[in-house]
Length: 156
Image 1 (cartoon, rainbow, N blue to C red):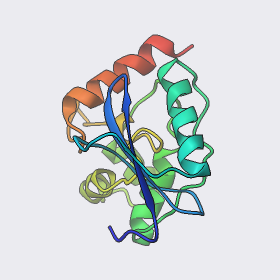
Image 2: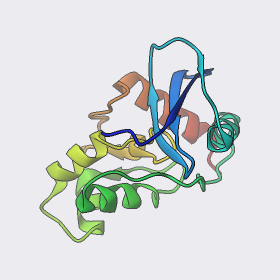
Image 3: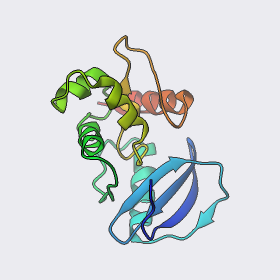
Image 4: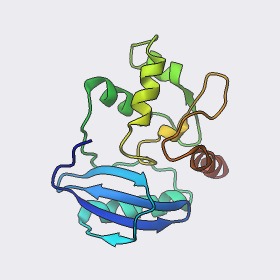
């Protein structure tokens, strides 16, 4: 993914170290990292850190921070669908494919899910295999399992 004049900040959170790339328009990327802490921040970085802190305290409010989208139309449709999955719930790749009007594109949905640039903010961790098993997560299945367990503990 091409970066567009972004600042990068790395923060240690309860679940691990997260890097946030922000532009003047919003958040471009959130990912797990092993990079050194620190970097450069802006208003959107601060908003993202505040939202993440609330999320990890159990706040179920969906992310409303502007996200800088770089991706194909298909990827953007998948990412938008991910943002409709309620906190504490899951969907299958097939269900997302049906939701975006491409019922046979569940593998392509998996690929788009893997390229989601906003881990946690756009909840790709809420997508599971048709058999109910945890499959595929760019941050690792351990992180996916932790995020889902966290949401299960805090959902109403």
